[in-house]
Structures are given as C-alpha cells and as structure tokens.
Length: 628
Image 1 (tube, rainbow, N blue to C red):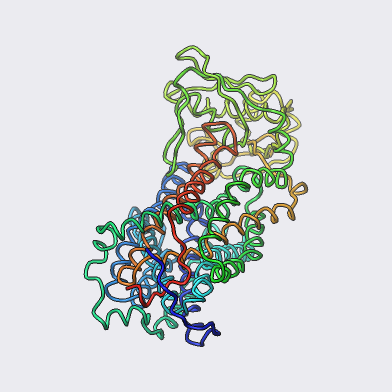
Image 2: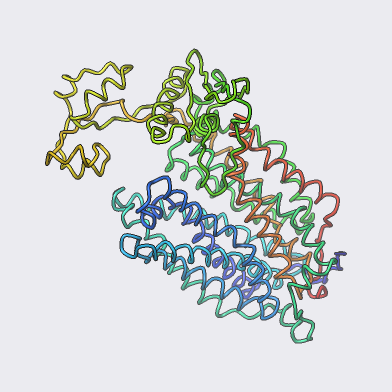
C-alpha cells in the first residue's frame, strides 16, 4: 500500500472530455440515488398499495422489510458488478447497473397493486427492490473508479468529489419532486396514484443518463492495463483471497468507510428521522428544512475534494470524524431545543419511572420492524421511547407482577400482551390513554384529535372518558353527519354486526376527544437554528465523504480496483450506516434517553478515527497508471 510517485502531470484546466465523464458519471449516480430514496420516502403509500390486504401494522412491517432488502443486497451487488468491472471494463458495467436500476424503478411506478394482481404484486415489488439494491452496489464503485482513472493525479480529489455529491443530490431531488407532486394533488389523489409520478419521471433521467454514457470511451487506465495483458482473471480471489489485498479492504472498511457511513447516515438520514419521529415536527416542514441544509452544504463535497488535493485525503476525513465525535450530542440537544422547546422543557422537568420485575425488560433491537413488545415492561418502554419521554427503570417489582409507570403523581399499570390474550387491544388502548393523560398533565406537548362517534356508542364513549365531562344532549345537538352503514364499518365506527340492522348511521364529531399525539408547535419551531444545526451535520458529511472516493480508488491496484473498493464501501454504508436508525432507537429505548443511541455513531466513528489514524496511509500523489 506504499504511495507511488506522482505522475508529474502539471495542473491544468478540465478538458471537455473530462467534464463529460464527470457529468455522465455524476448524473447517472444522482439518478440511481434518487430512485433508491423514493422508496423510503413513499413507503406509506407503497405499503397501502401492495400490502393493503393486511392490517396497518403488518403492512408497515412488510414495507420496511422490502426497504431493508435493498440495503442488505448492496454488498452482493458490489461483488457481482465489481468482478464484472475488473474483467470486462468500467464503462459497460456501470452502463448495465444504471439500466437495471432505472427500469426497476420505472416498473415500480407501473406495477398494479395487490388489489389487482394479488400476491404477485408484492412478490414482483420485492424482486424489483432487490434489483435496485444490487445495481446500486455496483454503480458507485464503477462511477468513482471511472472518473478517478480519467483524472490527473493532482486533481483526483476534486474530480471524484463530484461523484460524492450524488447521494445528497439524489436525496435532495427526490424530496423536491415529492413535495412538488404532493402540493399539486389532493391528499387522496396522491395516496391513490400520485405517488407513482416520481417513479415514472425517473424514465427521463434514465434516458439522458444512458444516452450520455453510451458516448463515453473506456477508462484509459483500464484499457492500457487490458492491452498490456495485466488484467486479473479472478478479481474476487485476488482482492479478498490474498492477504496483501484483503488487509487493504479491511483497513478501508474499519478505518474509513464504517466511520464515514455513520457520520453520513447520522447527519442526513437520522437527523430527518429524529426531527420527525422523536421531536414530532410535521413531515413537510422537516423535508423543507433538510432540503435547505442540503442545498447550502452540498458544494462543500467539492470544496473538501479540492482541498484533499492540497493537504491529503486522510487529514480531512479524520478531522470530520473527530468533529462529529465531539459535537454529535451537543448538536442533537440543540436541535431539540430549536425544533420543540416545549418537549425539551418537559423532558427536563418530568421523567417517567418504570418499576418492573427482574427479566421483564428486554433489549429492543428491531432492524426490520417485525418485533412486537410482549412483556409489560417492553410495552411501557416501547411506548415511552416512541413518545420521546425519558425514563428510568427500577427492577424491584415481584416476579410475575406487571410493570408500572410513574409520571408525576400518576401511576399507570402496564399489561402483558400474552396474558391479556383477546383483551390485549382494549388493554393497550387503556394503558396508552392513561399514560398520555399523565404526560399532558406533566407538561408534554400533547394534543387530542377530534373523535368520530356513532350514535349507538355515544353513551358508552362518554362513560369511558369521564375526564372530558361530556354532555350527551349537547353532543347530539351539535356537529353530526349521516353515513352509510358500510362506510361506518369501513371507518371502524361500528362492527358489521352492530351496523347490520340500519342502513344509515348518525356520527358525531366530538372535538379534542380522540387519539393523543405529541406535536411540535409550528409557532415555536426556530427554523433558522434548526437549519443551522442541520447544515453543520451536513458539513461533517462533506468532510468525511468528499475525499473518500479518491482515497479508496488510490488504495487498490487497477486490476482489482472496482472489486476492492466497492465491497468495503457498501458494507460500511449498507450495514454500518443502514442499521443506524434501528440501532439508535434500540439503545435509546434500552436506556430511556432519546440521546443515548447516539453513542452508536460516536463509537463507530471513534473506531475509524483510531484505526484510520494509526494504520491507514494517505494516498495523495498516487499514480494510478503505475499501480496496476
């Protein structure tokens, strides 16, 4: 891994052909990331279309599993297409990857739902999603290698940094397109068919990307190696079966890409999740805030790529890791106070205490969303964690005793889902209602939606909600509508048996009597501070990610470069990064602290900082033409 002498080519401006190479590679990769992000952003609409025969909870689980499949297969795509790229060539391989990704995405937009095609629809969806993941696993390594092998030695960081902007630009583009389509249609139309439009629009990007890539020539470095007969006949075996190359891949993974991935996912993806799901800011506002921060920060990928040609790749990446390690906790706490000060104040003043039997509380690692809390303690911690409530666990209850939750002066007893059996649904509703009332009384920003109540159930509803002090006569004289019996059943206002005897049902609208929801008051959200914190997080992303392509390309010889750099990159980003949201939530639920899970990116970044500082050598000045 010794650094070769620089090729000695003098600094010069970018040629027309080089601009074309960078534009074609970057545009194609933007397009692929755009496709990849669409599924995550539109998961709810996709779930209701392809898994609509299942209950909502099961539907969400299947949707998350399909999304996870795209991450899990990325390293396999790196192996498959990396091998082809080192055997056949860079150009044709990443031409194939973009075709696979583009057609798979376009077909998602055309694919009929399960209402029309039954079980075949979700099966085809899963297949298309896995094809997307495989293609993305091969695309990045091809694009980065292709651009790097066209670049002058003294400007490789700058040239490849344009590729580094693609994931962020893809996310930005997907957010913008979704926002435009959402604002152009009614909510009902968007959920029914409008969500397909962003997928179908990808055909335009696909056509442009393929047309430009077809006009490109093969990488000169690869072509020279092939003409000289120095190519690898078994890239996988040579890259990972020989220790001299395998150790480079191991160092690239643990000393660079694992840390880069957690900083990246923390700054761009978990920050979005944190704002929306932990701080309860409305989704559209969050998308706009993230889009603004990305628009402000994206140019710094190129700035740090350019700087890496002056001072080296490694110092910038290590500095980004160090800054992220030191400031992650303060930045996320600042984000809480800026986005939801009422929640931050309540968290500071009111903690919950869970008293449970020993062994009743489990570690809730749930990367696919399939696990359901069953014990009384797990049910309590799961709900409090999702409600962004800090808590302490005391394991002093007698064995077999249901856990209890103390919030202020109120104590609420949880339930065991297995023991509750057919009463689990009613027990869950009663538990959550009691907890929410206690949280509201403790200062948490909770609002209660209006309740729609059928006339047949009004008296029972009033009896079940004495805290509301409702008057039946006043409700019956107030806001009401008449709906068909089958509609009332569909809206779960009545069961089929209850609605069987009457053709129409009178339904009352009872204000502030429905489900509780934690929320961020739009009037209290400090947009400038939130965007400022997000910008800093994005800036760290640009520091660790801007020079990463250049250093990975320069670490491996030409004969196995595509294969060698792709696998550690996609294991780092697909697994270390892709599992970050689930791991952070599990750690936070385990500890009762919404910030505790941030130790995961901090520890992984610290690991890469130590390994990278000690064992990874800077590659500035490497002559790729000599490193075959």
